[in-house]
Figure (cartoon, rainbow, N blue to C red):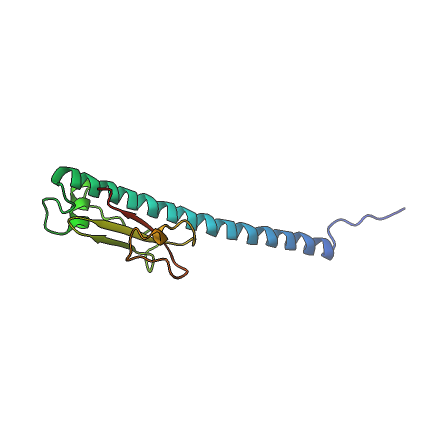
Length: 142
């Protein structure tokens, strides 16, 4: 007559725990990457909305300054974005960098992913892609 033991051996438990640990590590990296991609997508969307507001100001007043006196970027936000200035989803060093005049503008955001930027196209010379940082920039369409 044989006696069966119920339960798991120590080796079986260690194997299961190590597999769970590997799966958690992989999912944490994937989650962090997805968060960065999501914030970069929001940055691009914010800049596009800001660009649309500036272009609407231009179509009304034939310049980006508009009727206001605050400055082209601020007046477009007040007039066409319900007064809500886009803010970076992460904050801190990941700030938007608008450069606006009555005749031109350049809106840039620092990307976290390190790819997908367009600042090396010389569209916005103030945001040169000489280092590891990658900027996404939009400029005036007129």
